[in-house]
Image 1 (cartoon, rainbow, N blue to C red):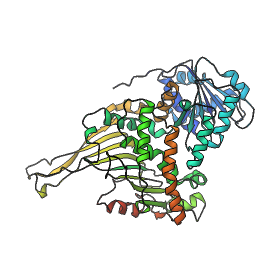
Image 2 (cartoon, helix red, strand yellow):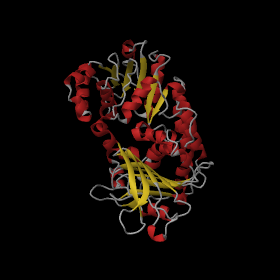
Image 3 (tube, rainbow, N blue to C red):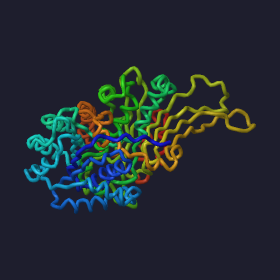
Image 4 (tube, helix red, strand yellow):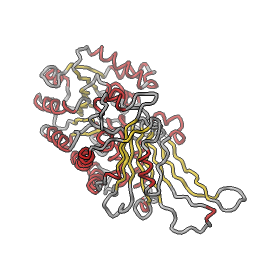
Amino acid sequence: MVSRVIPVDPFDLVIFGGTGDLARRKILPALYRRFCDEQMPREARIIGAARTEQSPQEYRDWVAEALKEFAPRSAADPDGMAGFLDRVDYLPVDAKGEGGWSDLKSKMRDDVVQAFYFSVAPALFGDLAERLHHHGIAHEGARIVVEKPFGRDLGTARSLNATLAEHFDESQIYRIDHYLGKETVQNLMAVRFGNVLFEPLWNAQYVDHVQITVAESVGVGGRGSYYDKSGAMRDMVQNHLMQLLCLTAMEPPSRFEPDAVRDEKLKVIRALQSPPLKDIVRGQYKAGDNPSYLDDVEEPDSRTESFIAMKLHIANWRWNGTPFYLRTGKRLKTRKSEIVVHFKEPPHSIFDEDAGSRPNILSIRLQPDEGIDLSVTIKEPGPGGMRLIDVPLDMSFADALGPEAADVPDAYERLIMDVIRGNQTLFMRGDEVEAAWAWTDPLIEAWTERGDRPVPYEPGSAGPEDSAILMHRDSRRWREVG
């Protein structure tokens, strides 16, 4: 199976924060791999922009080292490396001052796609947008890419959207969430809307419940001061898990087009009921072989959660009565992200009790081993009577594609190329972001007003015991994390 590569139009891409960690680890390696696959045209140019004073050649040397570390297979080709670096330039630019902006304007071409990647702190988004407009650098069709966090509450999200809207139309703004660029997330839409097998069953009549898990084995590490102001709710639930929930629960869009898809996602957020606090579990990891959460954030009285689990309901005809269980956390047993759809058992079993019963389960694995698994009930082989067992119908990308699986484009490759193509389907719209915060803010305010403390949990576990109890109350169990 060979994927078809469709080249994009020539472009100028400016990476503000071009010397930062995100550029080094994700953006530049993604662009290089697209160049090696001949999707990025040879007329394209990449301009790094940052405060650091250095020459273009010094920047190219730095880029080469980043590619050797984060795209080692592709970087082994010296001709490919040289060809890519020939298209890389650098300019020192002061985001809050006037330095470098006239030089940047002189480098931009008016007859190609223009894209500006704001790989900087959100506090600088307004400054960058204003200066691009003031200096006449961005032409009418230019696109800007902004990274999360998109505010830290509804007020700041609205302010950020308003600031960007002063200088760019909503059709020019690409709010990137790398989870939406994952191959399996898009396959979720293909499974639902491309197969008559699943969509008729995708509702409360046949689905018992849905579990969405994003587990991380690492702690907050060097992000302690930032993370303690956010927590798992702001850092993960409000964006990543919310988007996965929307794609799982949304109605079929009329067409696979940006606004049609995003309209349906917005309807899910607006139909999402606010859960009572008894249906929310918050936790903090304790010390083990590594420091505790409180040690990592250097705040002994912190009440910020590193883990959260919740039971949610969507108030519409499709999902009335079907719970969605979400959980995410740091320092868990393993790194794992998946969406699991538990179908109901048959309404009547023709087999006796000794045969047992098995519900069908559809698992969409996002990481680390991307793939889709469907458990199907069959008779246990052998002459010992009728006993039912589960067998998986497993579509692992690694097995299905073989050696080509390693070359499946990662999320940033796909999303950056979508920016150049002008396709906003996998990017969040401003009203989506604001609706998510409007749902999130009252929950945070409620547990803050009560003075709730997160429950300590053992590192390397599946989270607090209270999370398991949340499921046990409904006679259900979480899928194993590891």
